[in-house]
Image (cartoon, rainbow, N blue to C red; front, side, top):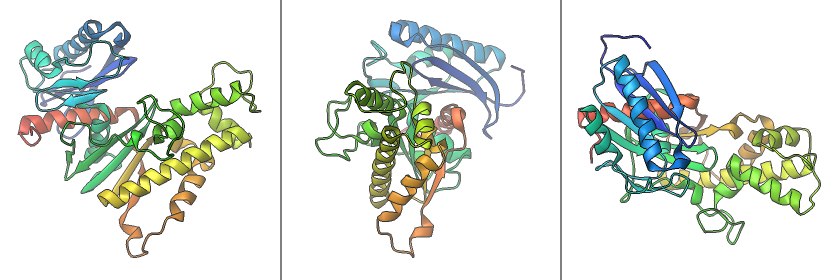
Length: 322
């Protein structure tokens, strides 16, 4: 990483595998990137050590004005505390990440949910740039969502807004990790699709994937494109359920832009054709149709970093502290 006289913030993306960080200026230019294994499965202490090491590396390379952090979980944005985190980061619930980072660095620190910041990054300089009301969906291990209105994240009363993955699309459907049944995440998230294909293979449903041990969403997409019946069924289910949620969210929020990211959006016709066909089934007055745009995310893996940077700049400017 090279030094510059420009003002920079440190932007951090905490993941289950890695903690990634970058130096970002006010225009969204990333001038330095680093990453380290998160050791999240070892618990809070190990993850905090990694987080501090990444931030220290960045601020050694260049003075920083603030730190922005994206983390999984439900976040108390005002106080910088992890309100709730599922078990894959033991001890993370209740961690005062924001105050700890300020204590380490002496600069302001802002933290928010990682998918909120993916949405904010896309709104800043990505697929949602210029939109007034942007909804985002990130298809990964699960299905996350984000709402950005007039350039600011909408978080809700408890910081849990945009949990789109747990919108129920199949009453009494397949079980979800949240404890409910029929959540859209069960049918659309690539990780959940892999779990579904393993289930069907175990009960003897025929497929070209039978006998394989390490099956990925990419395998499902490839075999679906070749005409494998089970894989096509899973992809069609995903397209149908995602289209249903997108449509319903459009009716609730009236967005001008809907940004969707993740591997499935790069799957080509085998997923996108049934997705758009299903979406077209729902009635929309022709006078309104051009006003809603569905876009594939532009920023890729850097969306979370850029969203964290944007949050840090907003925090410094006093435009997103409530």
